[in-house]
Image (cartoon, rainbow, N blue to C red):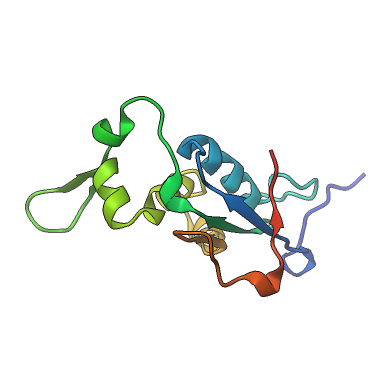
Length: 141
């Protein structure tokens, strides 16, 4: 018996649509990361990108539990003295799509393959998105 290993050209990718309205960030990010990696498929192969494309709308309407809007801090290193720190509430005002994008990015592999998986995530503020031609299926569950 031989173990099946997927090849990059054999993967049939699907497009999924998520509505982030009133969804908890972490729980939604887990579902999205699973689809991007391809772990929902029986043909999952760790060293091959077997995942699907994910489109997220209403990214500004995600929620956190507890007091995370005020207590959660995002830090980024600028290369200059003094770290840049902003709270989740500040980030929601300036770039609301980055909250969900960062949560998903941190759940993916930290290598070239993970960066390629993250390119298949499309996050948009508001109801509209430019991917109607791909006919994304609404994801339930």
